[in-house]
Image (cartoon, rainbow, N blue to C red; front, side, top):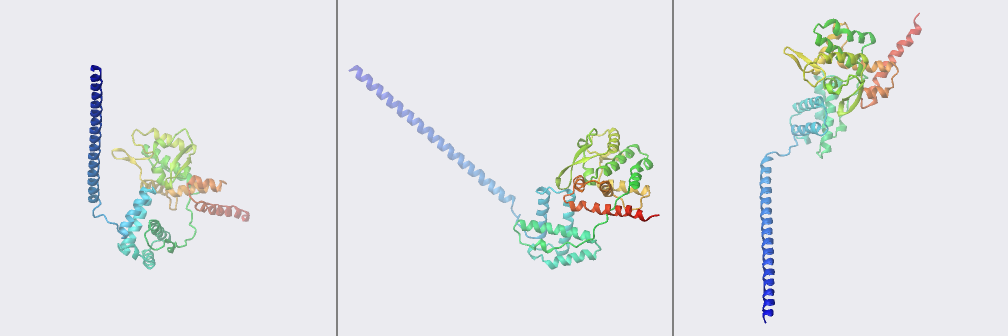
Length: 357
């Protein structure tokens, strides 16, 4: 009898224990569900708040088909998606804003072929060259292509034709003129820092064929004096190999030894207070023009003239045109072919020697 009572009591305790465990589990589950519900409510509240803030943030910023608004988007696209050069951004902004000044800030749907023809006539009447007018048309065509790409109806860019221009005359220095301008700083500059710097700049421009925009952005870390080769970021953010001559490396090494500043740029200015920031495009152009005039070169000379001289010299010496194209960073071989015409003229002069007595 005592044994039966003991077993019954144990069974009762087990039952009680099971009920307590089940009750605890149910309570925990309920608490978990309650917590999840609370968390969900909090998330909903946060999202609602963010949505409300978003509405306030974009309030009043409606999409516009007016030219000024679309030009802003186009410039943003060029800058942050296409990563074009600051100079290209500046030029496109200037040319498209000039269009808006002429036709007004109209809806792009109202822009038609005749308006653009009249605008072209206005540019011509302002004595802009055919080449400069073509630059304006190129900017407008690029803008219209951008609009069509983004499903905005507008006039077809194919309806805007570029004017035909005669093959450009390549302005370059002959060997004697090159020699004169390379020696010019030593003849006409007394300040030692400027003398050595200017010699290095002119040697560098001529021996590498660099664009002035590429030169001014070079940094000291880009150059290794003991190496003939370095890399430069050219048009369209394309990287290409550049090679230097022994003379250019010697002048550059001499120049770098005079540097006591912390500027990262390769070529820097000299201000009244000491060494300044990196040289600007205008400063380089003025420098080259000044020395050309001082040595009596009676033609328009710019940093680009030295680039032309570099390419022309290579072609005359039998360099492969594809190799010259790569060294110059030309996207198209057509651009490089202008130097073959220069070589043809040189060959004509050589052939004329047969007729001399």
